[in-house]
Structure formats: C-alpha cells, structure tokens
Image (cartoon, rainbow, N blue to C red):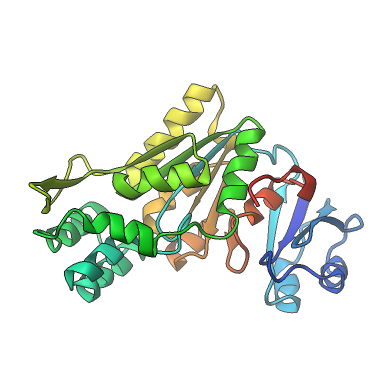
Length: 289
C-alpha cells in the first residue's frame, strides 16, 4: 500500500489540542504525529487507518486521509455560494423580493441533486422579475462575507504558484467581488440580466452548471500543462459533483450528502484553511489571516 497521511483539522478559533492529536495517534499505526498549526496536525502511515474510530474519538475534529505523494496542488477551483461564502446569493436576493421561501426551497432541492440545476436556476430567476437591480449592491454589502479561511486558502496557494479559479452557478455580480476579496486570479459565473434598472427574470445562456464547472477544471489543467491529479476542487452541493470527482483532491465543504459521499475529503467542522492542511502546508507558510 502506498504511503498515506491522516490529516486532523478543527476550526481555527477552537484549535486542535495536544490531547486530541495524541488520541488520534493511538489509532494510527504510523509515524509520530506532526503539528502543522494551532488547528491542524498530520500522521504519516503505510497502513490503512480506521478513520471511523478516530472520528468517533474526536467528534469535533475533521479526520481525512490523503495520499502522501503529490499533495500540493497546482490549481484550485472552487464553488462560491455556501463554499467560499456562507450564503446562497440568489436566496438573499429573493428575500428582498419577498419570495425567499419559494426560491430557497428550489435551491435546496437543486443542491441535494433532486432537480436539474439549469431548470431550477431559470425557475428561481423568474421569481425575481421586476426587482430593482440596485438590490444586488445591498445583498453584497449586507449579506455576503468570506467563510473562515477562504482568503488564507486562496492567497497561500497563489503564493505557491497555483492558479486559482472561482466557478459559480450563481452570478457574476457577486463572483467578481468575492474573487477579488479572496484573492482569486479568475472568476466565472452566470450573468443575471437586467433592463432599465430592473431584473428581467432571465439569466444569460448558456448557464454555467455542473458540466461547465468540469469543463473549467479541464481547461485550467490544460493551460497549466498538468493533469486533473494536480487539481484541488472544493464545493458543497450536487452541482459541484463532476469537478470534485475529477480533481486529484476533491473536497466536500460543509456539504450536502450527495457530494459528501463521493468526495476524497470532507470538511464538516473546520474552515477552508483545512484544505491547506490537507496539502501539508505548515503555519509559517500560510498567508491571508
């Protein structure tokens, strides 16, 4: 069996204790645990660890296993809504239109994989018809913020020479701003159409959905002259499934079950800086905090 690394991460504000690291070490037949930072550690091993036992012993800690070889990725491709930021922007726009319950219900079903994403997006956008376009600025100012560790993840990987790409099934108005705030080199998303200062109830075609995210991953890899094994992809819902499965390291971040079941690593407790620990970055290499 090839060498593996058990990676332990916790929320940065909580931290990972020496006692927790030692407890994990007792369940791993491997090297002495190595602390990466205040909220992360790793244990190298040649055997297949019982991650279920470790997770049961450390219920507030994310426990993941990654191959020791090729850990540091050359490309980061990330979803935006509920991944880089804590909200679904379309739901927040709908709140100003007085239709948030209807829109949020469709959003949830789409992210669970129960609805076709493209059709679900068209249906939700239709409910926004006539809303003042100026509301987008209020949504961004009042509802949108970066998730913990987002800037650290993006800026650290860029500093290490990786290409960073934000790909969103949401809207360019927010994606361009979130990309700038987090430090992404590039952003792609859907265009929400407006006329005479009001939303038309339509989105520009073709819609950026699951397959477009996969295509973006492949294009980025080809441009860098690398294969998909050099890509880290992160998302939270069914719309991210294709790119997460294709990536060398596919991460489900605070995810829906449809994605968690098929990702290489799952982050339920930690911030996005946990993705740096998965790649073996130590505290003194991290930027953005």
